[in-house]
Image (cartoon, rainbow, N blue to C red; front, top):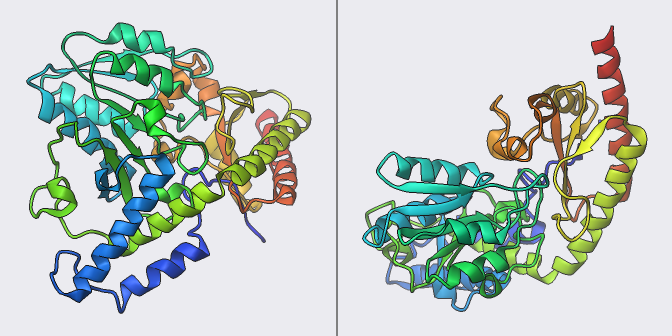
Length: 386
């Protein structure tokens, strides 16, 4: 049975151009980038090119301010803990929202256990942050303000430029988690007033096992991993060269095709939501409707009287891959904090599924997916009634 894959928010297939670019670095270009000989030089040049490609995607002023990590979660931890430890003489207070990625939330909780304090700003019923709430939460002890560009669960696009402008007035580092937006939404860290920004290439056609963190050289940062002088002394350990090269190519393609990608997945998103409303009764959209306040590539819906995990498993048996809960909480039975924060009841929160598309997704796949989902829901509801 052909599989319709609508879980691109958790992982995307590696693009053919990315795979081809990575191949030589598993064989003939095997050198250690720290080596002084020509083998090392070739690898360093390739990594420098990848930094420039990542920098171009987010409009970073200098490619030298790009730090490569193992993934998005490591980037989040380096941004949060690294800034906190390097700047605690300024204060020990952090401001985030109530719906951050677990990588941010758990890093902050760790710091709270070690004497730091945090204010968590609430969101409205679509998961939107009010910039004024962030501004009001800042104190004389605040050393970092951190939030996301696009919410991983809801798809809500946050007003990060407005938040960043208010934070800049206080001269405080502002960290933006762009894991769910890079490759799907335009990112301009200068407009955002971001002094740190992270992204995950595996979410837009790049390989797993590599992440990137932009850090303005004006922001002091304490490394989490100690050893060699890799990544400017901020991330010790030999780099994942093949992954970094692939990440650069994926970023270049994502930037070049961004407008076309947005248009394509945006049309599919609108078509999918319209069809779901027509075919499945008692369905709720979580987050903003398709449009300017929502990332174009995903829908989070709650299907009443059922549980999302059961829907996802039943759909998988029929050839449709979708997610129940966010990628980082897929094995947890806990309700995603974002759904609780927008006021969803536990029953509706457990009934949520996420359908996410990519540039490879076709309109026919969306049409077929709607039919599979509708028939699956009807069958499961009939079973629960009997």
